[in-house]
Image (cartoon, rainbow, N blue to C red):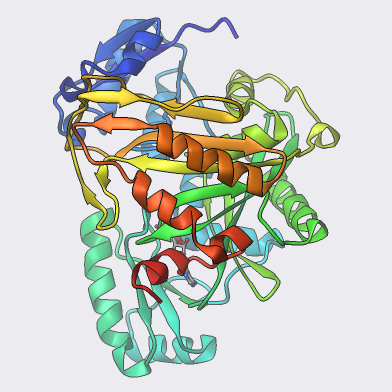
Length: 424
Ligand code: ADP
């Protein structure tokens, strides 16, 4: 696009490979995230020093922080994402659900708004919804701030504990309650909008392979779901975007059970797993995201969006795969796989450090092919080809999943991985 890119890093990331890929880089503070990547003032100062026009928030840290987006706007810079008002609306899961319900998007049944302080009233709400229920924090994220309650006698304690945790973790003690779905799949719709009233949906992803509510493997399209059902849902999401004045890229997340979709939340940023959608649609989603932020019209219409073949992404984490324990350290060896249909997105290189401060994701391997079986075969070869030393990586866990007959058949639920690990 001819744009110059300025990357930021913390002191712990000074040797990062992405800094070499950028035109320029600025160190914004110490390794501890609160003093660098989460420090809005340090980031704005870096933008000023670098003479930047726009800020891309990536997909972690402040990417969904409405106050940060507002600060960027106030500094006269473009925030590459929706407006701060829309981030605020969708960042609070209670207001997000209310907005989606109003826009005709199907939601998981539950409390209409925030849970009241009165335990007796909460018990009535839970009874109406029907057990099992899940108590969730309005400000929750990253799979934290949730508690399943199977029996009314446990409700009051679960609410008290989750409230306490939510206040500590998110600074917001507000809770809501939903029906707990026992065996759902996680299906999400990618949307893309400009500032001229155009909103498109780019197909769906299946992200049901999760551990502790964290995604591990994602794919597009979702196996075994009727195309008409996906199309109807995609149209609903695009319409909802027009209604709330959405700009840029976003994802509507749903649980899918017994042929029905139910909205759980929206991510107002580019997601880690956008790669599989890029592979099957041939659309450079980040390029469109930048175009939208620059005020340009989308370069496509809904009719241009066609999916072809299949794509699967494995998140390569620096962790002891089967236990999921982080494994920071120095990468003494780094060889990424290649070959037909293999894409590797990574910020790593040999002799780089995986700092202990941040998320353990160090690479994404994406296999594309004419069908799912070809993707799985290519992914298995790619995982076998990968060479990493100095830190532990979870390639063995991925191979374990890819070999499971139920996974190979397609359509497993979000509990599949944890149950398979327990030998069930
Ligand atoms: P977060 O923002 O923390 O990712 P979500 O609301 O997206 O929170 O939920 C994360 C995960 O928690 C879902 O992918 C699913 O595995 C589980 N979950 C959330 N709500 C429900 C529900 N009502 N029933 C069953 N599982 C749920």
